[in-house]
Image 1 (cartoon, rainbow, N blue to C red):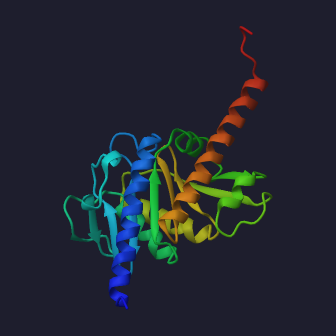
Image 2: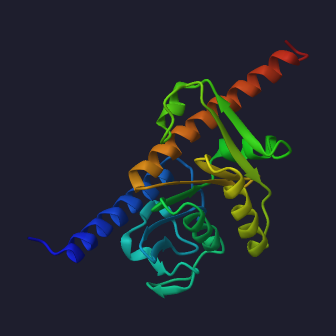
Image 3: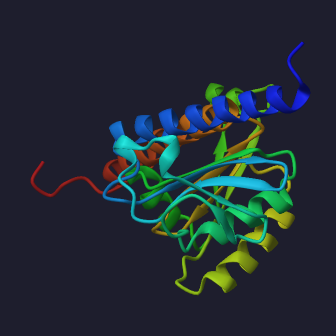
Length: 221
């Protein structure tokens, strides 16, 4: 019989490999341009997270740092991203989460700016909402909260904490004109949430654009 500790290490190794595959997949879709975005998995008190300044299109397990729950580096090479503290906040406020994905797509950037005054992006009536854990009907209303971006990461972490507490059912959080965070109990679940919500961001963005064009026809038409 394989010892439990070895089983745990094998499971963690598989999740880390899945995370790296996920990061490369996001890069291929154009969701982490330049060196943007960050990804992590958690095992107990240990978090494996991408270091700052990495091209995600070629990410491997060797590129991950190991940090503790306070964000202090305990292993690996490189320097933690300034956004590492947002990962530790999410893990603290969502203890069931074991993987976090942060991307910068065109549609989440646009919608986060459009809905910043409202405070959330409303998504309702779409069949793909059932791709979110715990959602069983397309009539579900998903309110994806939007918080203002800031270079004061201590303040941003405090805002993220408050937002997660005020939106306990949310499956992700948008930073205005910045990007999108989502999470899951596994990398596979986090990927499902990411793919479903990014699809819906694009659908909603295109719907709003079409509505605006219909309301204000081009003067040269």
